[in-house]
Amino acid sequence: MIAVFVGMLIYFLTFEISGKSEVITNPLNNRTQNMEQTVFKGDVISSDNVVIATTQNAEDGTEYRLYPFGSLFAHTLGYTPMGGAGLEDSQKIKLLTSHNTFLHQLTAELLNQKIRGDTLHVTLSYALQSYCYDQLGGRNGTIIVMEPKTGKILAMVSCPDFDPSSIEEQWSSIVSPENTTGNLMNRGSQGLYAPGSTFKMITLLEYVRENPATWRDFSYNCSGSYEVEGTVIGCHEGHAHGVVDAYGALTLSCNGAFVEMSQSLDPVSWRELCEDFGYNQGFSMDVQYKKSRFSLTEDATAWDLAQASIGQGTTVTTPLLNTMITSAIANNGIMMKPYLVDSFTSDDKTYESVTQPVVLKQCITASEAAFLTQGMEYVVKDGSGYRAGSSFAQVAGKTGSAQYSSEAGRYHAWFTGFAPSDDPQIAVTVLIEGGGSGGEVAAPIAGNIFNYYFALQQSK
Image (cartoon, rainbow, N blue to C red):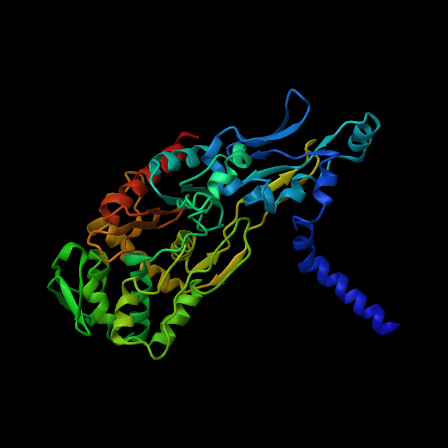
């Protein structure tokens, strides 16, 4: 009997800690349908107090979920029917739970009235989300803005998108084989892309770690190309950078210099550094998230090392992880868990539950973070990322032009960076699919976002 009792106790504790959420949110569980009989699903409100999702009654008395801004928050808010997605799915139990006072709930029950569920306050800013959406301009890709010190996601836009208000009507066309746009996918947290030259920050740090006494002596004379195992790797558009040192290689994003560095690197140690930065790792989040991959092993060839050094080959990342890495560099090497749920409050304002920032890990040392920050400053001051500069603050960042096809000129355009570099407030990552040069396409967008954000802060 004691063994049975202890076994049941362990089961119930395990269920409460890790199993309850999965059961409650299972689409076969009728609990949410039962809750909807007595509770209006709560509103969702942006950080600047704009209602971005609410429940209303149609003329015939039926309830429907209204998204006043259409597709603007589509991939973060998600939707409820057709299996559900996004915050509407992951937070549905809380949105259908009321923490109003007992008297308030009793009065509603006696009057046979529904009560309104708790209100979800998200970290997303309506103003910043709108601006980023406009900057994306309908192009396929994503933009993410995050606070490095907390992990709050201030904006996350993804295109192509959809209108969550009419998801049921659109469903058959969205999931049809003819639709190859992937508009249900949140490119920020689920899209996997070669990181291109944004990965060179990790390559440089690994080189410095393996050569602590001599890395300052690194020198490479770039002619515009580098041959590895009979195959030529060129610098972007064949630029010959001349003689560069370690910082110069990062500033000018010289492929040849990084391939040269890679040939002496230990692939196992390199992979461990990447995993410290979040590659090959998963974590729970308010929206769906895919693991980024770095797959070098101890038997990696010279070609494998070369491709990895410039963020190509088998290495792929989500734009969200790139933002997290950039934020960790900005935050003295500390990576924060990204989040969208800021708080829940009851309809009568008597209850509040606030999300506390969570440290995921100390990825690198503070001195290593300062070293990379200085290199990223050079990129924006004097190098490939100069178009990301802001009139309000010094930006530190890195561009990337990630080749995704053997055809000439097929590049995804990247920029990831933060500002101010000496007291980081925001990190910004821009990815434009097929955009071309990161310095020419993604960097100016990031610069506009930095300027908009700091101008907005000054106006408050």
